[in-house]
Every structure is written in C-alpha cells, then in structure tokens.
Image (cartoon, rainbow, N blue to C red):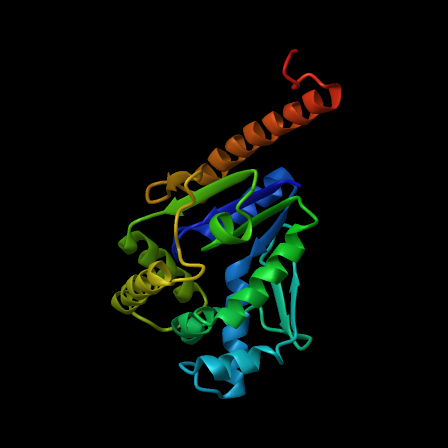
Length: 240
C-alpha cells in the first residue's frame, strides 16, 4: 500500500505540488481540505450557527458527500449530487472552516472516509493531519512550509485570478488567523510528524518542490520493494 502524505499550513503550495507529485508517480491525489470545505459549505447552506458544535454535528449527519479523485486535476466534490468544486473555494467558506473542523463528529467522520479511500493504496494525500493522525504509517511524509507573507501573496493572486475582490492585508490577516487556529486545535491540529521531511517552498517553484518529493518517494518505495523481496526470499531472517 503506497501512501505519501503532504502536510503543511495554508498557502504552502500543498494542492498544486501534491497534484504534480501524483501525476508524475501515477498515484491518486486526495485533497482533504476540500472535504472540510464541503462540510463547511453544507453547514452554511443549512443556516445553522457555525459556533454551535451540536448544530454542526447534527447537520453533518445529513451531508451526502462524494469525492472523486481525478488524475491531473483538482478533486471533484459533490454535495447531494451537485458539483461544488468551485463553490467551496470562496473566502467566506475559508473563514468559517475552523468552526466545522473543530467539531469531533466532523473530524471522526471525515478521517474515517479518508482512511477508506486510502485502503486502496497508491495515494498522495495532503492536509493538516495526514502524516500524524490519518496515515501515521505512510511510506513517505512531507511537511511543506513558507513564510506567512509568501503564503498570503499566493492566496491573494489565486483569488484575483478567480475574480474575487479582496486586499493583500485582508488575506494576510486570514492566513495568520488560520495558522493560529490550525496549530492550536486539540484534535487533528497542524503538526509536523517526527519522521516527516521538511521542505521550505518560499523560494522554490512548484515544479522544483514536486521533483524533490518525487525523488524522495522513488527512493523510499524502491527501498520498500527491496525489503519485501528479501522477506519473500527469507534473506532478512537473522542467521542462526
């Protein structure tokens, strides 16, 4: 079961880089952040108070979420059969994710769903807790990071390309606020796995970061294959 986890804060380049890595290695790509965004959008449409954990937990019970892993492209997300792939990327949804992500019933349900997807193997998955909580035995764990200013600039440019009006200062404020919320979360918070490889993406292109991860992955997976072969041949057994 080949699984690579890529964790890191908002704007570190996880989505773009994970898609590149998945395409180059021929693996499936899972954007777990999209799942939390979908849950948030569902609660917002339900008109409940997002700061009421019980109300959020109740709303999640009615969420019919479908996640389609598409090669060489963003994850397709549907709620009740309706495509919400673009709708979950608005600043309003971004600002409200933490309310929903902090609810244990939501996290438990989505973590279970992510692990079910991972059972098939051949997966590159990105998020906040993939290497620490969801797939602690992954073949390769990577932790991406960059300065808040760099990450805010990336997010700002992304929103401009989508025609969404905002200011850089507002985006920087949102990025810093999300960092605080993600890192202070008791369950599933943003933390680097002890055995994760750290990569600073501040001054690197997505292609450069992806290539570095691909090289690491090929080395890890090759070593794993050699270990399995030795096991089958009985060569890894200690001598009497």
